[in-house]
Image (cartoon, rainbow, N blue to C red; front, side, top):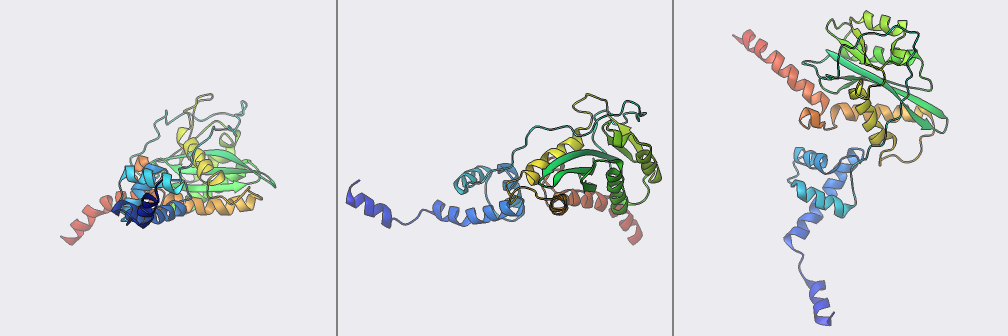
Length: 279
């Protein structure tokens, strides 16, 4: 390179695009960091627009590449629940249709596990099919029925004590065919439902949540190192569930968080009644 060319490059005024990139990259990285470092191009672009950052999708992809950031990747599922052939099974009331017209009409639940230095931790989530809200959860060092009952108690505390039209779907694991599980659901008016054995789609919603829980938190890019104890994982799961319910953008919901989706539903339901009251 000629000396004149070298000094011309060194003294050249940065282009408008370069200046804008220098402004946007820290904002996008901060947004990516605040969302467990799990957002890929589409969700980071959506989150940026919601935060008032005017950026295009292709521009977001280019800036993420410059910043060295990328979305979380999911891995293969490992089964944790085993059916008990001696237990009576509830009928399948879902038939792979994991949708609902309102909250507390269909809950889906499953178990997964996480390895820690202190031993294996087992995690149970109860998910509302309408909004993908995690309504109950439990982390424990065992996978006995008690942990499922604890998750139901949390769901009952957060969603109300009785739901006459509620179905609670699960796989055929022995925890979900136990008498105590059926009795606890009966206490809140819920009807148990169990998918078919050997069907990869029999419990798809809960398995999906377990999958991105593993990708976003357990093996996620924001974690500081291996999980040391079950208690460490439980505390981290508490923060992740709060983020999942109140901030995480869900493509199924039109890229809004479950809490926002439910608030919009209830606003529509109560709006006409308020207008009648005014009249």
